[in-house]
Amino acid sequence: MTHDIAIIGGGIIGLCLARDLAREGQDVVLIDSGHHAGTTVNAGSLHVQMQSRFLRMYPELVPNLEASLPLYPAAVRSWQALATDLGAEFELRRSGGLMVCETPEHYEFLARKCTRERELGLDVEMLDRAALRRIAPYLGEAVHGAEFCADEGKLNPLLANEALRRDLHARAVPHHANTRVTRIEPQPDAMLLHCAGGEVVRAGRAVLASGAGTAGLAASLGLHVPVVAEPLHMNITEAAAPLILHLVQHAERMITLKQLAAGQVVIGGGWPARFSGAQDFPTVEPASLIGNLSLAQHIVPPIGDLRLLRSWAGVNTTADGQCILGPLPGEPRVHVAVPGDAGYTLGPLVAAMAAALLLGRDPGFDVARFTAARFSPAATG
Ligand SMILES: Cc1cc2nc3c(=O)[nH]c(=O)nc-3n(C[C@H](O)[C@H](O)[C@H](O)COP(=O)(O)OP(=O)(O)OC[C@H]3O[C@@H](n4cnc5c(N)ncnc54)[C@H](O)[C@@H]3O)c2cc1C
Image 1 (cartoon, helix red, strand yellow):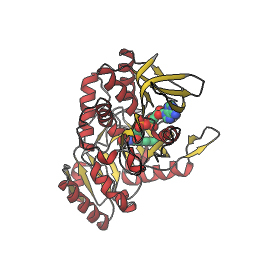
Image 2 (cartoon, helix red, strand yellow):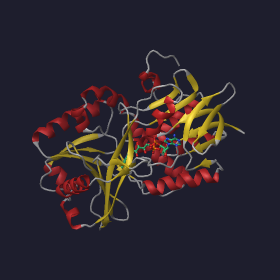
Image 3 (cartoon, protein in one colour):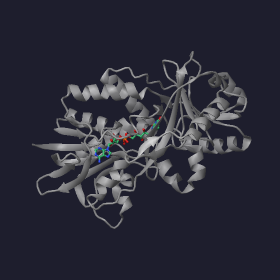
Image 4 (cartoon, helix red, strand yellow):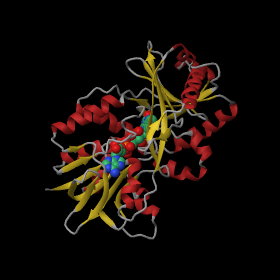
């Protein structure tokens, strides 16, 4: 049989995209290698404001980050709409986010970022030490001030992913798990997706919603999509009484933390993991475990009283700070759907934009700068 559309990748993009297309009457099939996805390990932070650290480290990416900024508040609204639509409780809270700093110099940098983000339409404000103490008394003495973003928040990704999977099951969307597509072969009447076990899936069109696997699949068509796999570390503590209301990040150091409804504190922020073994399994680095927890305790001292429950590693996907969306140059039957930074936050929104492009509709945002053609300017699409 030939499906209308085969989606390669069952992460947050693939799950939402399959749902959006099935709702429009498309015959979709979802194929996933079940291999270290970002979605299955992620921290559930809903990010909106730009990362101060990235602006300093990668000034050449600032235009890309600013151009993508309007997507983020819209993405949080998409998550809220999705929760309502699914009738699912996945602990989504738009409780606001604090990007904290420890020095007057970094406060000044944050204040300039805040001014720029307000110009670009974000609901952000600066909080000095006294104002911060009033709304976040759990922060340590080292914290000098923060930028507050009202639209930021958190959800429980295990519950959200499961709610989406249940919905796809109810819609009878075929889901090939543990199935790795090794190459895509264009035929005049269909795309043939060759899988590692010898299976071949036929579809009129295909979508690469494959995170870090997208580069290899595009390469099988002779095309260049330079996504990079980034193994990252996460920690979660035992449950504690309600303490941390906000999503907390650091302006200059690698830390993101928040408390789940059940009381555990989820701590991440980009500490590195490493690949090991023949299957490149993302593996925890002891130095990241210690560094991440030490910093968490420095910012929120009561965390020091909690036991570590679990650590894990997973694979994030990075490109140039922007989404990659729409048809591949030279092969319009194959689309790409890879979110930009904070890709879980962007998931439902970017999937809806990808669905609109597949259905020939208006994606609601200008996607000209998000096309895969930007990586091969000489190609035509
Ligand atoms: C530890 C960690 C914490 C994170 N925390 C957050 C957070 O708090 N907030 C946030 O916004 N973002 C976070 N992220 C980033 C976010 O998780 C990702 O950007 C997002 O989940 C990407 O979704 P995706 O569907 O594009 O890709 P993925 O979730 O990576 O899914 C891609 C899927 O494609 C499959 N695949 C790949 N190649 C093939 C192939 N050849 N054949 C078949 N299947 C294939 C993989 O198995 C995978 O399931 C985090 C990432 C990590 C690693």
